[in-house]
Length: 465
Image (cartoon, rainbow, N blue to C red; front, top):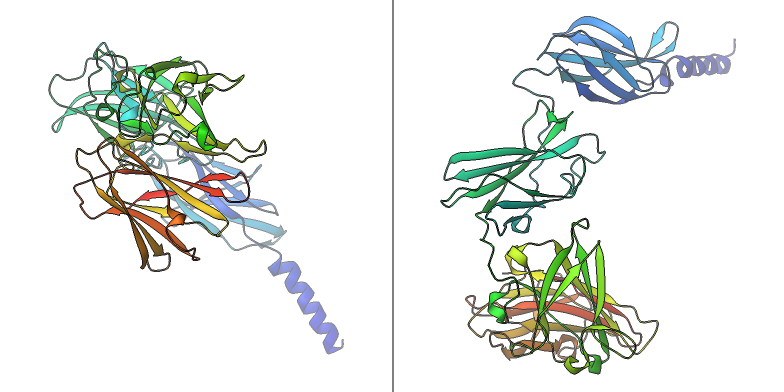
């Protein structure tokens, strides 16, 4: 045989017997009990799973429909599973191995979920009867279990100091849920711990619970149900209500987080100096998942506030009975000069969330001179008047390029500014709104618009300090 023919024969032999015989991939433990293991894998040839105990062969089973199951095993025992493919009658691939363990001991296979940081103060209230009321979204709201393979549930604990005084597992087949705990909470100061864990058939699997979100004793429900007309008593706001006279319409959206329950939210309007606008304290009942209404009545269109109140409200306070947070509120801004205007929607701010109040904020800058950057600055959290500046900065290093003094903002006051009017446009820039006195705080809302089209977008605002 000629050398070239010999080479061809060798390469063909190698392809048939070696390179094309690949081991299974993505070998994964799907389930483990005290006496069984179920593994899965991906493969293209007939494949098998070999079970080893302390390096010694135990048994072999074939994969069927992507799974291989071992039965009659020892509890709380570590095994090694090695998967391989059989490509011809006498030839097998290399092994792909994982270490697994049956359940039943102190080293469970079940992974502890991550801490449910999507829960917070707004999920726990003390109702009018003095009992804990929980508003529980899906325990997998953060997508921790990306493939939804496991059922998750919540665990509620009351602690007084270091002492656990009550514990209750909250297992439901569907969410969201509103739960009232029949046990009265402790009379002394306490903390609420909320964690989550995996369940199977309604009971906890052999695995640990997540870390806990810790919430101080919920505030007692007030006997007064309506919102206060003093802005200093309010913690939730829509920071900017636009003026029809300025060419912008505002539309309110009330999203009920628990649409099976009617929700009531109170609103109250304040002017640019923080004074209550008479006639603006109203309750809104949200039945179902969403309710929308214009801020002001217009010709042929209803509004939350009638024609006699048009353009008097600078910002809007929000409150729910017992300081619940069933409703999320947002406002949509739209240029009324064009039927094809693109609107911008911004959400309410909640001072309890910790990101809306500060002494310095960063605001994303425009990317073209064809846009303007507007902002609303309010002082709803301080009895002092911060002296506020807008500073134009370079994105790459934060270097200050220029600054403009807005002046002192008194308690309850709202100030509007178009920051892009203060500075010549430069690429790769942003703004900071800040005060030099860290004991004084304020809030900022950002809104960007187009000079040539009726386009609005919300500007990203982030707390710096």
